[in-house]
Length: 268
Image (tube, rainbow, N blue to C red; front, side, top):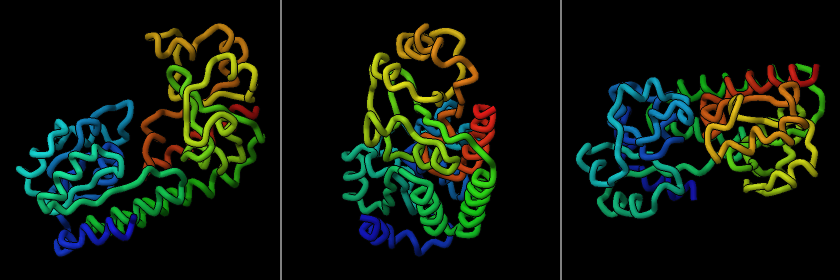
């Protein structure tokens, strides 16, 4: 699959620093981190979401697409970056129009993420920036492994009881710290888990995206359920913003450092 994607974008590689459009939030992060400002023609509609997009502040400087494929054609980019699971009709339309399209899979490990950073660096004509981003992640991994952490089971829990499963980037991040993803007992990649099953499984701690004093809506109600609060007071909860882990990219260096600090607090 990767070879096919590289072959497809070959026409764009004639440009040393191609002008690029990103139509996926995770490729937005790669473009924002690696490309020169004058290379960026437009980003996906999610690039400016501060909850999900690590580069939301920088994304405000660029046009935002609404998701209509024809918008991309008007911009006449040298290259378009997308996710492998970005809307198939959009990707198919762009390919049919001869647009050079590079597709990126979901990063399910740190190794996946660093490989994607290097690939994006090559496509954008910015290999040195990609190398620097990978080196920062490697350094964060080394720092995390050098610290002593209690070997605990941690359940990554989100709205409505969504749990990150075993074959995910979250698992790899926890593993760097010697922590176990308790979500692996429920699903390979992720799924919704009832409160009763979470309580019965009794992981040592919860990994949440942010601290909540009270439910904001029905989706967040489970996270502050009295039974869960009793079992998991603040000392048994660790926090990592979603914008640091929803995609694999240069933000992983900060994600690892913050998770290491939280794990250290948890083990005290």
